[in-house]
Length: 263
Image 1 (cartoon, rainbow, N blue to C red):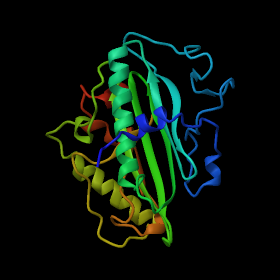
Image 2 (image 1 turned 180 degrees about the vertical axis):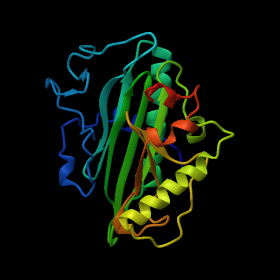
Image 3 (image 1 turned 30 degrees about the vertical axis):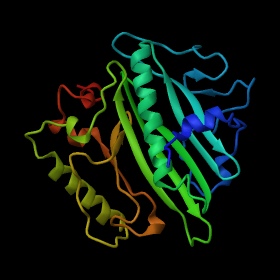
Image 4 (image 1 turned 90 degrees about the vertical axis):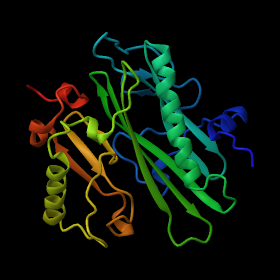
């Protein structure tokens, strides 16, 4: 079967950009979650980025880039609504690299969730910008899908943390000094949070890996795990917020977190 990128398919078919209230769907929407693209001629702005006047208010600095954020969406009536961001940067090659990474990531999530399955009843994709400062962009994505006759849907999550100057994608182990036992420290913090909150579990906590999924905020590292990996379905995607202050001694001085930690 020919594999056609869902984004290209949606664009070529002239997908509808009419805003759809994601709050009406089964997908939970975070505080910074971006809705679908506003209708043509509106002036709804996203952060420092304005949909109509695209470069108004976007400040670019040689060593401290803030990305312009353009909300886009795949809308395939009647059952698919997936929002995703695209960035505006001074370096167009880096801009295209990051935008392609975002499109590929979201496209992969859609395929994993059955976007081409004729039994798909509904799919809703959202995202939130965890961090967009000091030349770092960190985005968290969720995709909810449910099949016809299914008792409940599934939600998967993914993330992307990237340098806006170079387009480099960061893994968890890029954040820390490799000779320090950062995984042991983070695992102990998470175990303490599980105990303190009485988080229900269905399996032992698996611990983090060097490629563990995460996203960044201005103040904390957020570690998350898939549904059902060690918590029941009703918990959703378990997240653990870890302030940079408690990780300070392990932070790689040449890595991205060094830019966010006050000396």
